[in-house]
Image (cartoon, rainbow, N blue to C red; front, side, top):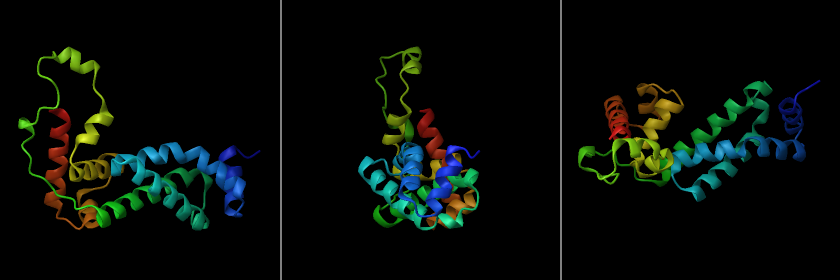
Amino acid sequence: MKNLLEKNFDLARKNDSMGQKALYEMFSDKMLAIANSYTNNIYDAEDLLVTSFYTCFKKINECRDPKSFPFWLRKIVVNNCVDFIRKNKNLMYLDIDVNNINIEDEENSWEDDAYSINLEDIFSKMPDGYRLIFNLSVFEEKKHQEIAAILNISEGTSKSQLSKAKKWIID
């Protein structure tokens, strides 16, 4: 007996709207979170989510195996996000001295801060260039050469932005 993913995947491949809706409901929350981690704007992320699912259902026959569907869909979402950022945002690869940025009130002790870390807040304050390269490197496991080709930047810029993003998070 087929599992739910396989069943809905097969229905969606037949252009069945119920199968498409089921796949959307299964994966939309996670894919929205991914899109938002790139755009840092929920409205843009929602638009990218819809565009990504449209692309997904239009090209679903390119995905051969239902088990690989979540990874294939994620790739579509990430590619749409990167394209969106490249086209609509003026990314500046910043040379910020992160030691001069006061993210937390210094009166709090380290122990208090350790319990109140909010990753979403940290990433929302991170400069776009840092966040984009950090996401591509850490979450998508892209090499600097691949990132440089995707974003039309040098490998050195990719490496320095990733280093600065990590320092941003630590500081």
